[in-house]
Length: 236
Length: 231
Image 1: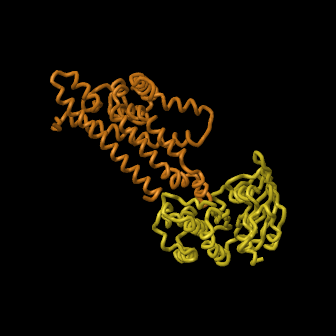
Image 2: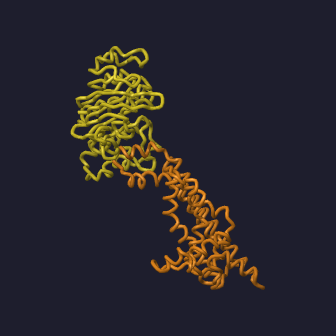
Image 3: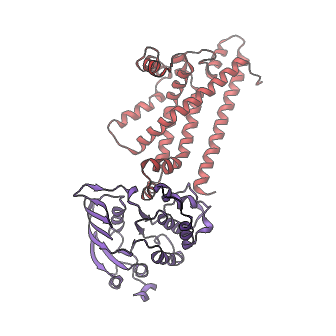
């Protein structure tokens, strides 16, 4: 379970959010500029909140009252960034292996094979990231985060930089990830259709505030400022 | 033409030894300072930058003189090194390497610093989320991505060390077999009647070494670049 209660003032923006997710796939929904990325950066430890508390299962990640701020590298929270952020100087295989090596885990070939098969990236292992398509990069970024056995997986609009064809190509992998990986996820998106397909619970953020928490049915009333679902409507 | 006499070979070997040692010993300090200047802000940063760049703007003879009074046998730092570590600089090849390292240092630091500054910090964030602590993050992401800058800095420092004359001759003099580098030997030969041919031979050697260093750096930089950007 992830429990977040944070405040953060940025130059022209005030974020104050409080929510809990039961585990499984949670969707963090809201228009651009709502503070979604800021919020998950605080969960990952890349930004420190001004005040508040972030708890993941038994781990206190941040607690301003107790002066606790666990450093990023010790949180073991997988983060799939919008732009992949693969290491250009490593092969795909070395990228995938990076988190495991940094944590000093023993190599588990069966797990490696399982994740490579799930994401269908077995034929890319020897390549360099510069030679991959956007969709391939995102799949490898997902694999890289999964292979460090994360306590939680954050996905920040992993489809936003892809065109429609690529999005349709990746979505089934994300569904498999949700159903097979057994890792709690926070999936960030401004796209109601995407979240309707992927998330089991929704936290709706707008202008730095949580305005609604509930099931995916919340997305039916998504306002006009947010990309209205088109193809995804049948999932409601 | 390149039928060098034993004395000339000695000067060439000594020059290479001094330039290699100067570059390699300066390298870890150069990387540390480049990182500090690229990433940290602290009190006295401008002053530190000024001191690092000083050998670039001071007359080399002045740098040599300052080395002499501080690293010479009676100099405060020189005495410490001689007594505590057994390293003597004055009138030794080690002193020549020190002078060359100091003179090449600003040329070493600058490209490394630029290399570190152009790194996409978001890749370092990604490495941190994957469990890399500061040390490993630097070793596995920052340093490899700054490698083209490191190579460029090393080549510049090596070339400067190879050609250094003023500070070296002021600090450790011009002793054949100990501190007489190619540059100093060329100077000596041009001052000696009948030394023109020997000077010309060493000039050719100096040009060949410099050219080789340039080609090697170009090749290394291209290899590093290929790794990052595909073809």
